[in-house]
Length: 94
Ligand SMILES: [Zn+2]
Image (cartoon, rainbow, N blue to C red; front, top):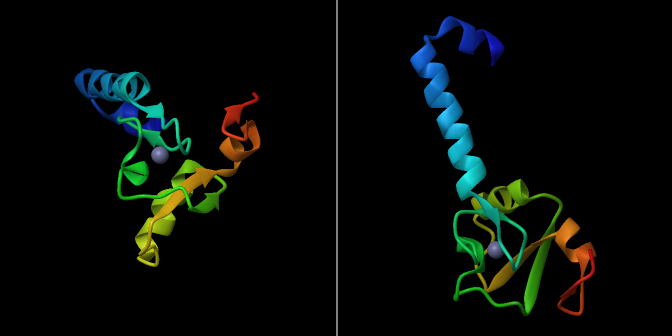
């Protein structure tokens, strides 16, 4: 990435900085599953998803990977393993 920045002009570097800052300012974690998202709840925790069946993944990036398999057809809610450890009986214990 350093070589790309060095080969590009100052304007491109400034655009890249703004894009990184936009991500830092707009992306949060979903309060239901700990996924990274610009909305809360995230798109995977929308009203069509039920908390009766939970798919536990290690990292937020794994949610997209599982979704891309196309094997998720029911009302399955995602939860990251880290979020699961921090939450007991619906109460955050971190
Ligand atoms: Zn979510």
